[in-house]
Image (cartoon, rainbow, N blue to C red; front, side):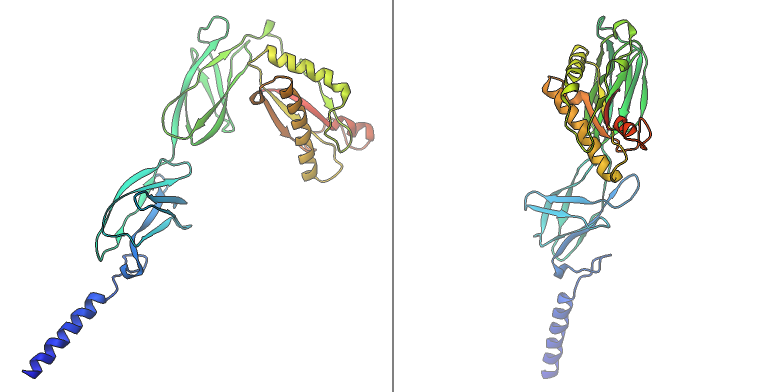
Length: 310
């Protein structure tokens, strides 16, 4: 009888030890007793590459970020059913139901698809309001699509883009489009006719600066006033304000100086009533010289701002 009692006690101890044995996760080597309840990876559905993503369980709430390899862990959730939101920059968020069971680790990998939207519209003649054939250029993507009978369609991934519509004997029209979801976007353009088909490029002056300066000289303010009037009279016109420098100093320093010159001219025109989105400032450092940099007279020609019709 005593021997039977000893065997029974030993059996209870073995069962207790078995119930306390760590429960290993399938791939991470972690256990339920470590507090892990849900684990997995977040990846790009098209490429299978891991993503830097957020995992949100709103009801708790928990906000978890994935590791460099796309892996995530959710700890210490009571048994039950939860709704988690997986999201990553430039990807469509995905809502997934998660079931947590006592004594088990839920393994869940989630794939996300990149945000991409269709952009379409019509190019209209500003006078007749009828469709006009032309092209639409995407900046900074570089894509150019044809607008046949005025209609165009293109597909763009997540981001912010400038669309430039062009048509023969018309002034450009520019619109900004933001792609932050997969909903189709409608972007139409109204293109003003160029007066007599004349080129506007010859109507813009070159603005010169003193050495190591981005202050606009008084002698150029009248010319910039005329630029402002020209732009306001032609609302479809967009220009790049291109800043340049001579070769004194480092390339990096001159890059900053040339951009400051472009911004100074842009700010002047904005104060005169020109919309900021129609003025694209860029600094080219010493990379686009107008003359050699050997003589003082040559260097003066390189310290300048030019206007480029876009």
